[in-house]
Amino acid sequence: MKTVSKKSAFGFSAVNAGQRNVAVEPQVIATSTMGQFRLTAPVTKALGIASGDYVTFITNVADIDAAIAKQTPEVVAFAEANGLELGSVELGIALHKEYDVWGIAKGYALYNSKGIALTIKERLTAKDKLAMVRADFDATIEAALASGNEELVAALTREGITVEEQEEILVANINGRELPKYQGSKCANPSGLTGAGLPVTFTDTNVWNQLKADVDAKEEMNRTFDADLADVETITVNNGFEDVQVQVLWLGTSVDSKPVARTAKAEEEKIFGAITAADLAAALQEKGIEVDRKNITVDSVKTLGEFEAVAKLHREVKATIKFAVVAE
Image (cartoon, rainbow, N blue to C red; front, top):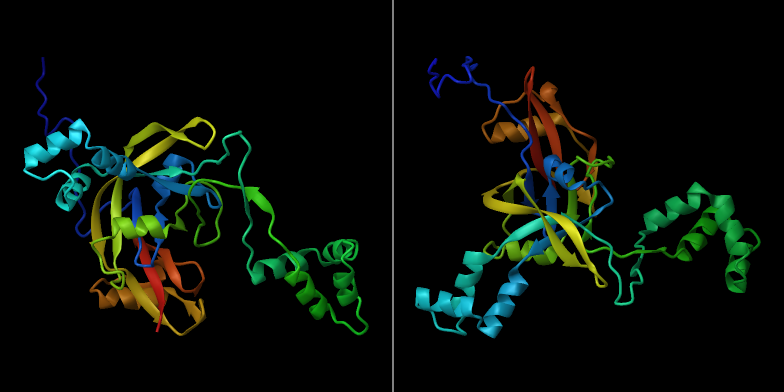
């Protein structure tokens, strides 16, 4: 029988100098922007999350608090083993540090105790409403005139009224639709792309504050949690009416880092001009990283926020650049 060394069982290949295999890692990132999270593509693919879906955190924090309040046998044993007093703040801190677990899951629809789906009013900005009016102006104004609202009809048919004035009136009278209510926060792809397996961002200020409780809110810092795709677990949660199963991806260890930031003159959330590959190359150079701007691909960025670009390091090697655009 031929003996095969463990070291040579899978063969060898030469490593080219200055090259490494760069891939997007499965990560959950609490960004430097208050309340904002970002999920990398492998995470959304594993959980089947697409732009427009809801994302929720799963944790045992409330269960631990309940156990502490009841002074369960597990809590008593932990206190005795660690020389801590029951009911003390120190005991609570120690228990949470030892046993807190956080995970991420796709949001699920919520119901009341009778099984009736809960709803929430659609949130529309003035920009959203104007886009809706302009998308089908004739049908919108026809519906308004047939509404039976005499005051609205009189305003829309006033002598000499312009189309722009009619649009303004219609916008003021548009209400969001009643939509199904989901557990969690609605996510979106920063570039407006759709489909699962893409990076998304969402906001959850409550969880953001808990996961970054030891960090000054004014400090610009990303906290990146590793996520093991092999550690996806099916758990049971209650949707208000019945138990349902959800897939949870548990968060691993975290690393803190400063975001690559470029300043821009801004009015509200819009910026004058756009962030270009040249801007990113300059920002990276300031960090001691040399990347030719011609090898950087970035979508048009014209607002404040956090985004991603792709840098081609070699013919078959690409890296994701995460950067933030902040106001001066």
